[in-house]
Amino acid sequence: MRILGLNFSIDAAAALVVDGALVAAACEERFDRRVHSRAFPRAAIASCLDHAGITLDQVDAVASFWNPALQLDAVGHAWLASYRHHAEYLFQVPAQLAALGADLAGSRYVATELDRGSRRPPLRVFHVAHHLCHAALAWRLSGWDEAALLTLDGYGERASGILARGGPGGIEVLHELAFPHSLGSVYAAVTEHLGFAPNADEGKVMGLAAYGTPRMRDALGRIVRATPEGIEVDLAWFDYYLPRPRRVSARFVREFGPPRAPQDPIGDRDRDLAASLQAVLSERLLHLARLLHERTGLSRLAYAGGVALNSLANGDLVRSGPFREVFIPPAAGDAGTAAGAALWVHEHLGGAPAPAPGTDALGPDVGVSTLERDLATSGFAFTRPADIAAHAAERVAGGAIIGWFQGRMEFGPRALGQRSLIGDPRTMATFERLNREIKFREPFRPYAPAVLAERVGDYFAPAMSCPYMLVVLDVLERAKALLPAITHADGTARVQTVDARTNPLFHRLIAEFGRHTGIPVVLNTSFNVRGQPIVCRPAEALAMLATTRLDGLAIGPFWVEGRRA
Image (cartoon, rainbow, N blue to C red; front, top):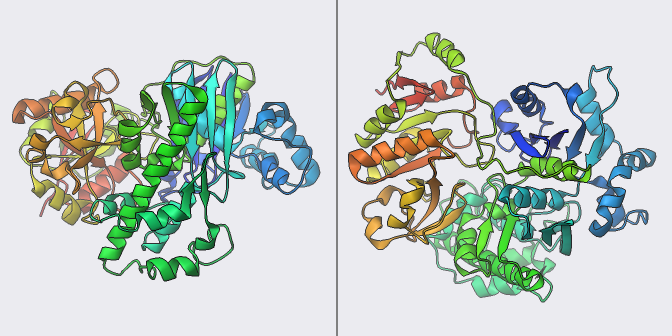
């Protein structure tokens, strides 16, 4: 059975599930070059189908990331009940939406976009509740038969998250967090107030938090309250649920000060508000985790949604939360709902779950012959070293900052050794050169380390697996002086552990760097310039090599020397 999953909202994406296995997934932004693209994911669909060697005619069903019927239910359509009965009405929704004339929001829109110019029978399109998509992705990629499930984001059709259980009977929703009581929306609103782009720059606020003091924590905590059932937002402080030009209310402005314009300097108020917001987010996340643990009694948590990309809060969850194990999928945000929808529909059409892929390298690849052809016409001189990993590691150990373009592209937002920039973490010169000459990023944002999985405990605590760079760990005291370029202002780092089984080439690069330096840790950041998507095709990697001061590019088995002035 072949199920094509789609998300055509923020972070538009496509994913393909074949006989229960997630075999391909890609974000549309990597092709149309628009960050957080909301376009219908035509190129991403083509990439997934190409990888599987099939056409759209060979797809058995399409799974959409959103169920418009739940929004209709919210305004009084009694023929729809709740998540509890979702499986019963999911397959009736397309016909009912058509009868209601809701085709642009539902299956007719999807079918029309997919069927342009085709004479084949219309595809079956199924709409899955947004938070079930998040939950299905987290659970099925965890590989666990049973787990507590938590999802948190800005909003789905009418919810901002769910507390659930995954087990033999599928996903059982225990509690729905009703929008507008939303941790994700509150974080986005304050992100905007601090002069950053909401639903895009929340990671900048997380980085800025390390420089502030959470002196407004209690005030924010009274606004975003913990309750016996979940969380409650005092809506007098926010306008994000109303058609207003800004997301916070006049009352918020009076209490916390005026909004910062994007071009204004960052002041103490901004740093302290970021720190306070981050502290409250972590506290409420831990509260929800404890509620879920009490209700399920399970020791494992699978967690997804846009809020799950907050790696600082994730670190608090891992260290202080009630669960023995926590799994967060790499595409935890809305892009991942394409894959979650496909996995959910596969099972509800009678399919059995398959083993998780164990990697985020689910996107497009470029063959060696294609790479060689593109390089031959690029105007760059290139060579083919006997061992590209050893060659690149030697250059990085000598102080070079390089592009690393290898294998299938990452699906999620983190560069994990497929489309990465690699540097020496032992010197702040790497940090400064990246910001000044290559990435052009704000100086308060940290860079991340990639470490051999078997050596993580030598440098970071707790010593745990972090394959998807989604958990902030403490840098050990003795390691801070060794690794200044990846140690953030608060003594932490967003760690990626690299396993030889899942990424042998990247593992060898780090091991070779360790052989030269004695430290098997590299600085790893996404292969892009600030404000642009991660590079996807060779032309984009070569363009960045030509327009920045990168020292070189390891692209497949080839080495391309940079053109530094």
